[in-house]
Length: 241
Image (tube, rainbow, N blue to C red; front, side, top):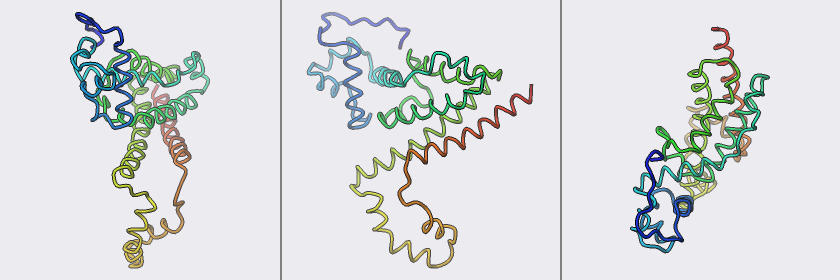
């Protein structure tokens, strides 16, 4: 899409622009999910006719790509000297920060997780972000394929955690039932199951585990474990050389 010339057509409306259309679409997606985004709905939010949007954005797929690229630009940029610090062992801190920012972005815009995951749009913000992500480990002397796979492990972890977080929030929104409500509902049945003695480890977990763990702490602790694995992968790659 970014390779195509963008022509507004005859009689463009002064109040409209690609940026305004994308911003309105993001607001709708954030509030109601990406399925609520349509050219008609966005036009209604802007107070214009639906056909006027097509002078700026050709298709809904184009609009989704523009939205995704736009929100990826919200991430705080890596330090300009990131490429210098990785050679001195700073890659882990940089990759940790990247993962924290990525999670925050998806929690702000949950619909991003389902749009362009396998084939992200090749817009300027996505490309810059990818370049910076690869650059985090770019000074270690690793093959670029190894860098891609190692950083991809971190990205997969973040997406997996956020998928659970978003799913829980959506379940509460859809059913009106909180986690405590659910536990109260299934509690009597679950107590019978555990009393059978068939699931001793599960029974121990119920007794000893934190009922309301801090999600930020859980995410960061898990991220540190993932980075331990990435560090081991880096060491293996360097030994091959």
